[in-house]
Structure formats: structure tokens, C-alpha cells
Image (cartoon, rainbow, N blue to C red; front, side):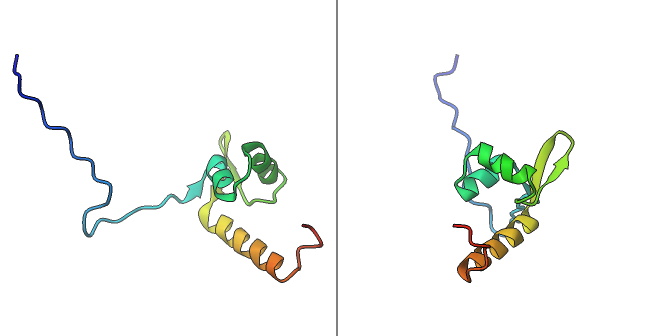
Length: 88
């Protein structure tokens, strides 16, 4: 048996220069809940009733990134100018 320790593998926390970072095309309901600061149950309810734009894919819900951010931008703009239908 050798008494020399093997060097631990190097873990890169940042990509190498020139590396392309690929962002996901969709979010999960759990990820959207975290982004919005909502409970998972509340987020599922908003997805099911169509408030949050989502698509059922197989047995799970996926939220397209671009549609989610467009919806969120529109929701924050309407809240900023007071056209949210009186909801608070």
C-alpha cells in the first residue's frame, strides 16, 4: 500500500475563458417558486389556473423562461402604473 495521498480533483467554479454558459430554456415550478418567493403550493395553484404561463409536458409542468420573464415584466409594469385591477 502506498502512503502517498492522491491529489484531490480540481473543481472549477468559473468557466474557462471562451466557454459558453448554456442557460436552461425552461424553469421548474420549484425554481419559479424560489424566484418569486412563494410557497410551492401557491406557485402550483398559479400555474394550474393559468396566471403563470406554463406548459404541461408529460407528467410535469415546465415554465418557458422567455414567457415567464415577459409575464413578470408585464405584471410589474402594470403594478407600477396602477393597472392591476385594484388588487393589492
